[in-house]
Image (tube, rainbow, N blue to C red; front, side, top):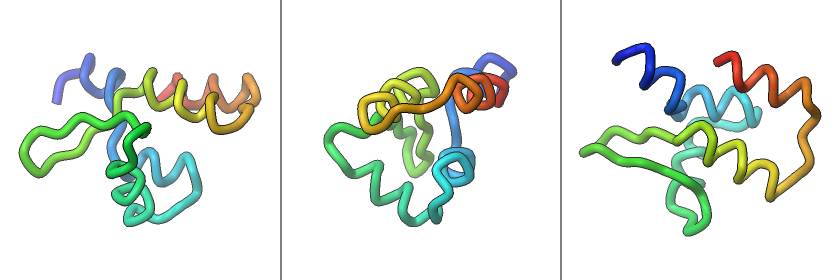
Length: 72
């Protein structure tokens, strides 16, 4: 995976760690109509900016958390 892709897309594990939920819970979220997800075959990637916008819609996050996510 190129450096650009690593900065643009998050893995299920990264989203799981960020949200503090299981990877299974994230996979379940990927089936929600409003959750941003990109699939290539069996691989699941979450567009980083769309995910952050989704989190903003669902809850208020502090600038520190946004900075942390931006550094992933």
